[in-house]
Amino acid sequence: MKTDFFNSFIKKDKEEKAVNNEVWIYTRVSSKDQESNNSLQVQKESTENYAIKNGLVITKWFGHTYESARGDFTRKEFRELINSIRKVKKKPYAILIYIMSRFSRSGGSGIGLVNEFMELGVHIIETQSGIGTQTDMGEFQINQKLLDARKENMDRLKSTIPGMKKFVENGNYLGNAPRGYKIYGPRTANYNNREPKQRMIINDEGKQMKKAWKWKVNGERDYIIIEKLARFGVIISKQTLSCIWRNPTYCGISTNKLLSKSIRGNWDRIVSEKDFIKVQQLLEKNKSGYSVNKTCENRPLTKHLICSKCGKPMSGYEVKKKRVHYYKCQTCKNATVNANTTKKSRHIGVHDTYVELLNKFKMPDDLIGLYSKQLKYTYANLNVEESENTDTMEKRLKELKKKDEVLVDKLISGTINDSVYENMKSKIDDEIKGILVELEKSNDKISNLENFVEKSISISQNISNYWSSGDYRTKIMIQDLLFPDGIVLNTEKRQYLTKNENLVFVCIEEIARETRGQKKDFSVKNTEKSDEVAGAGFEPTTFGL
Image 1 (cartoon, rainbow, N blue to C red):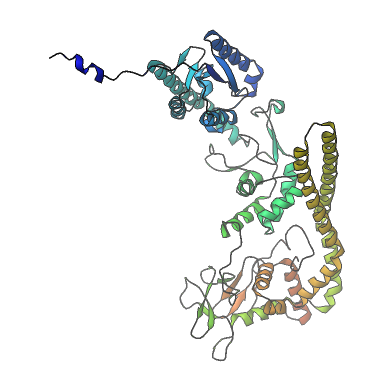
Image 2 (cartoon, rainbow, N blue to C red):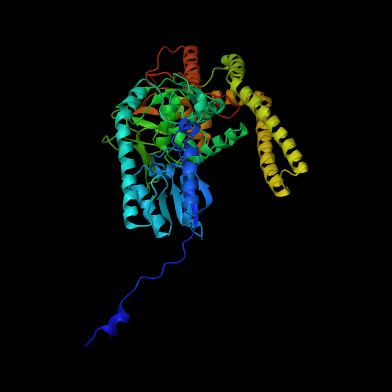
């Protein structure tokens, strides 16, 4: 039997459709120097000549700038090329590249992109050699060139890393300048900032960020800091601000991965090391950035009391049947004290003894006049920054009003349409409104100075009453104000050992003790005195002493 009958069952290749002759171009250099030496022009001419010779039509051009090839998706123009290929309905026939090292130096990642493009029906063609992915051998050669580019990059790093390491070890900064700084030196990407020796200086934005660090140290919320910075023309996202808080560069410390240990860098600090550490402690207490307190309101001294035996914060609990609250050290046995004094309790509750302790910080009447004068002087001295802030906001206000005038001129001349005008006008008006609100607040602070002084004196004379009669939030504020690092409690003797008290109240307590004729009080010991009063920035608030 002949087999001709079965010929119709042989599968044949489908006829190829007419080739799309539209192509895109991608060009790139890795530095500003290469951009200035006509390298981009050479790539452009090579790809254009190839297109003309092969009857191809160039419809889009990507790149035409300098971008590092250390990572494929760190390049803005390259990402734009990839996203365009994925989204556009009518795909180009091919992407023309001068040489494959301009496309990618990542090796496997670059090969993966070539495969993805091919699945979408888009070829890659190297115009210098004419090799492309239209054939199996061409695809193999393109992939090999990408691997060669990766190896070339690795070999280059082997010779450059020792020099980079030495550069960093000498206290220099490697990489793009962090926000708030401007870099001059031999390695800067900006050709206009090239100098023989590196120097990294704080720019105008960095000067405003100094205030942000102070606000953070004083416990200000991130969203408030973002709003305040916006008043001074510094627009920053919450994600960026979160990264800034965790970057030691701002306190002058280099932690580059080329180093075996951190060192001090040769640049000005935006924040002191001490304040940077304080911010890290604040972040560690609450990694979410918000103050969440799960402590029962009947036990405000939870975590504030510190066990004298092991040095760990004490927790609290309630015997629900008796409705009695206690503080307890989770580490030391029998280190438990009752919170309140009851008829059946054998010992005075620590809340009552805490009130007795606060009574020692009551201001003597004969000190009020001097204290009032000192407060006013301190307010004026510490609020020099407030005055500078006001000047900055007023300057920004003038700039916005000028922008508003320019915007009107553009609308009249037809440079922009009504829609663009309304959009930009709305943004300017919102920022102006915000600045005016802040300026009003600043004026209110000055006008309320007398009320602030009176309130401060009242608190200083009745600090124990404010604590005992205040709500949970008030108690916590007073505790943190007087003893920011907590207070040590000897659970056996029921004695407090204070440390790192607020300097204002330390002075009050010492003067009061001398007034009473007491040489020494063994129930309260000053083991360490604070070098701060209430942090930077002195505002007329209830507890801003």
